[in-house]
Length: 448
Image 1 (cartoon, rainbow, N blue to C red):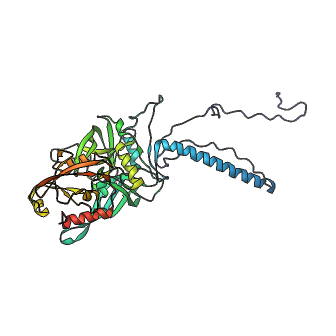
Image 2 (image 1 turned 135 degrees about the vertical axis):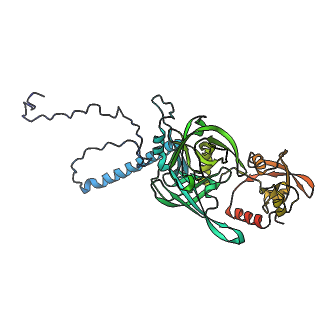
Image 3 (image 1 turned 135 degrees about the horizontal axis):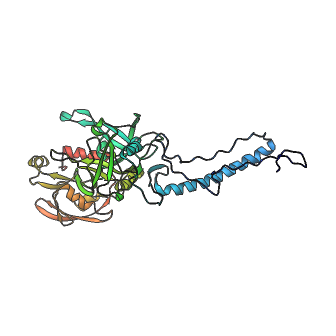
């Protein structure tokens, strides 16, 4: 090229080559960015955009080249689709759980620093509140209750929930939706949905509901095992059933507190974060905005303050997966009967017994328990050689067993003690069984 910018031999002007933009990435030098998505963008969107090729003037397509071009494009799309689907499935399998081959149950994120170490305390409380506000919902319920003289009326309840998938799966507490005939959900932006119950588990006090929606903002699951006593946590919920989106701050007071709630022993996270009625089912988040617990209880009393509890998310994950995949928690043992505590003479008269203590009730006809010899009204002396006087004590021993194992229970019937050994089967709940048990218990406690 000369200073006149033309070829002296031909006289034609010389075209200058395009100069690369300084600092632009090339195929050999990819550039990666971590971008925190805005709240109104779907979480599944990648944090980068594919470069767009400059537009060119279209050329006319003749019939001679149209058919082979279309065929080539179809084959290429098929191959790329298969490769992309396989790669996507492999990547998703690392951090997500797939229910029924479609729904992403939860997504785990780990924030890391430049050295690759996990970073937890990276956000302020206002930043956490802003990050998770669209992942926590208000729940209201309606339940038909039978009162005195067999009159029925509608009782309303309220609680909270956490979105766990973009297409509408949410986790809450069992006691929030227990017995509900209608479940309604309100998002942070005020949008309301009618929800259906996917599955509920009384022992873990967890339930999964679903609304017909898309592009919701699911919470990112953290790890409760990584929590430390004294670590800051943030609770978001619907206290009093009227104050949706309320944010409270506190610390982890204890990591593995054994608490008995409604005759069920649970191991929970203890916190001094302000928890009130209506917070149940809401989220407890760490300072990275990750869900580390599902709020489920508060100790109340004149001299009690700052005692709140949450189900560790590592415990909740297993239950959530089973509830979505099966509708119940698999691997639970079923003794084939229920326990009933008789602690006062009024109940003793109703059940027509003359001794206070723990009894067996509701033995299912044709069940393994009935075949083993248990009868409704048997007084429970001991379970696996340990004397028990409460339902919680007996269930704690039985729940340690696995399906197929046996349990030995000593009962007293007609003044005589006898030892009965039962092989435990898997517990598969049915609505019909629950309703029948309640009706029999009300009309005739021991079926006599």
